[in-house]
Length: 370
Ligand code: G
Ligand code: MN
Image 1 (cartoon, rainbow, N blue to C red):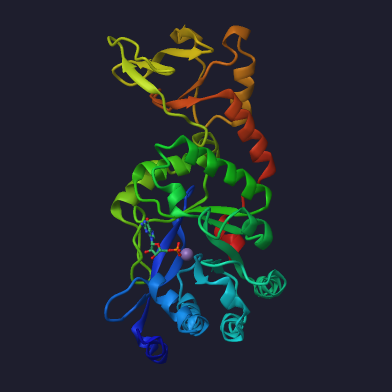
Image 2 (cartoon, protein in one colour):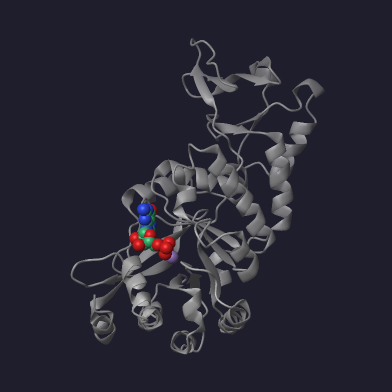
């Protein structure tokens, strides 16, 4: 494969863009720019970059791609950021650095550190990253949780954005360990004043779970495949995002806390689940059965605490803890304006959400990066 010829003819390097979505607002807030190479035989970009490195031309190729990506970024849609992939090793290359530092400002540019090898000298790397940050760039760590992109990288590079490898996202709706890991990483990243991005969202169920977990940024085939700049979301994704779009800050806060529960209708037997609700034919909940510490409890309509998601969280918590002692820890039933069941909220999650809300401000993401 003739990498030198490819570099000499940048028309053979095509850039595509993949949307990045703000999970709360359900809108595109950024694009990852990816390279596609016109080569015979057709090879994945990863293989081309690996081959370029082998031929000692990795940094040159990265430089050409960075220049093109920054040109493209200058024409990005309003209020969107653009992410560009750079190998940390190549950040020690003067050509790559000068390409990155060419624009007067790097506001709205996210530099994704995509590591396929050991990190280079940290002192030099930190120096370059500081320079890029001073120009307004945001630093991201790509493929976090895989290969060379482990916890040490997060601690050393202190990125503002962490892109979770798609291996952690795949089937997260069915895997409690992945769910717990992403939840924990969200906590960690929040404490380091950063943002989490879930890559490789491929199904509506993964999307739903990530929204429930409060992962702020999402990317993946379900939302949109990489395409000509600036591709829009798929119809399926637009519909799925619309369905969960918050209509006010309060619904939004409560929606993260909602847990699904098993539903049965009036004349059915209670299902063998730890938590089930009986609903009328119109969908209104009127009885609940749950198992706690091996004991089964059944609650009647009058014993249920029902709240609307528009109710402020503090008020919900207050109503919950002032219930009679025997019912104090019961799941709280969330209904919509028409009285239909939306889901349940557990008190301990409500309390941690309140604590979390106090810690975080609510500046939109794109404002922070632009
Ligand atoms: O290493 P990095 O995360 O930058 O890789 C981006 C690559 O992942 C691109 O080549 C892109 O085509 C691919 N990609 C983007 N979204 C998805 C997805 O939902 N599933 C899979 N399998 N690949 C994806
Ligand atoms: Mn990437």
